Length: 468
Ligand code: PHE
Image 1 (tube, rainbow, N blue to C red):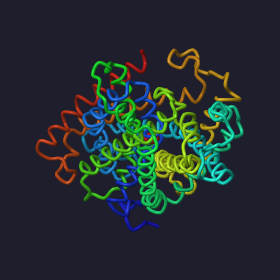
Image 2 (image 1 turned 180 degrees about the horizontal axis):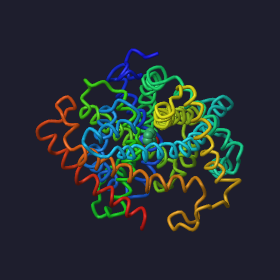
Image 3 (image 1 turned 120 degrees about the horizontal axis):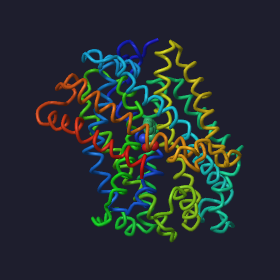
Image 4 (image 1 turned 180 degrees about the vertical axis):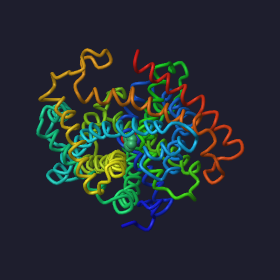
């Protein structure tokens, strides 16, 4: 059955707003809430933030537009859309490989993303139990000292059954929305949950304004010290921006394929990029006041969300309830992103093997679930299993780190470079028309960026990722 918002005989978004909300849901995720503050913390605060914003506008936004344009051009699975664009431009159908790389990347990222999603669920549980048992007025986790709260995270990681059980729970919940489909699953979820997410983010930020070290957080994120900018900061910002905007993973191609021909994609890309960047900044303003108020350093690393934040909630009034709301907010963001990640291989499998959506969704549980089990076990049962030690960039890494490094350092830049070449050079001006929002100077500017600046920057990330 084809739904009301049908696009090219397939299911599609029921409105432009639905598309924009779903795409924002895809972009806003653990990348904004977990990675952005961590990266900013480790790379000099304000300097990182400024470089990040420049990267989003000049390098990522053109690619975001290119990906949605490819999807909408074909209104089919990512591979068929890329192939159609190439063939119509007189090039080889093998250009569908552009999407192929992205589909593989999305599947792998989904594998380890759901492991982190499971960790988030663990803290929802911890704070939910705590809110009920200790009342919501005091600090959280009463009766535990700081070390015991910090130790919750390593002890979670040490438990194979907890890590894998929660990861699989996250996979199944995600697949449920995939199974429900574009308009009745992904779209409904985005339309209801994204407003809840924004409400929680703003409410917790306002809370931090009054009870946390808000001034310190603002100074940290927005004091610009140019001398702190170096190659490492620029490349960290660029890599983070690509991940956060869901680029190089055929995700925006897939979501773009469900969009009607009447939507101005240049306009919607701008809205999506602005919302994603706004959320990353707000996440910094939400997290750092709470962290600083508890006397924790900004560069606490990946443990920032799972160790520093729980410790911080312990010492503040109402901590157990705010902690619960905080981790519910993170759950919403992670879920709308993992649904996007699942949709990429799902759309491909449905078209490639002519299987129904429920069957494709079930296969994703098996495939992505299995990948995630390996990733999750690398913190405990398989901690000593370093299968790629003979390859320098993977030396000493377990499965989780291998999948993360392989995708963020290699596959995402490669996928995105291919998108730039396909759209900027192979298809040349085929995707440009006023309906897409591309005419006059904007078109010329975009063409300059997608042909030269974006691919060049991506090649640099790739080289740096391989050799630095
Ligand atoms: N952008 C998401 C995040 O920041 C991750 C993601 C990548 C989601 C690709 C979908 C597709 O968490």
